[in-house]
Length: 171
Image (spheres, rainbow, N blue to C red):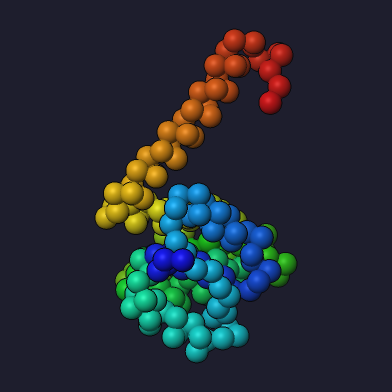
């Protein structure tokens, strides 16, 4: 395996069902990544070490998912010089996900966290790929190809709908 460019971190292994979508899209786009659990509350020293050293290990973007109080993305962003993409997760101790969304979204000036929608780890992976694609032609082309495939899939649907009509349309 090559040196990972993206680090996917999550506050608990219970976040993996959501966060694996980021890993899957990065894999599809050919971007090396690492994935681990780092808890801002239960392993703060590990979080500090990670945030201080990720850029020294060649990481370019951090994707951080967390539920509940969701301090992991913001705390990592307060330390690392790297862009951090926060994934709010609707967890078992969540207030319908709103606590996670607001914890990640409402960062003070000077400590930005790019925040995707609730449980939208796939979008976090795509955004990480777009960031990396600004300086990597191979990743840029993978992003272009991915967007073209999305457009083709929609084209197939609207052509079919227009051909057979809405009453007979079934997915």
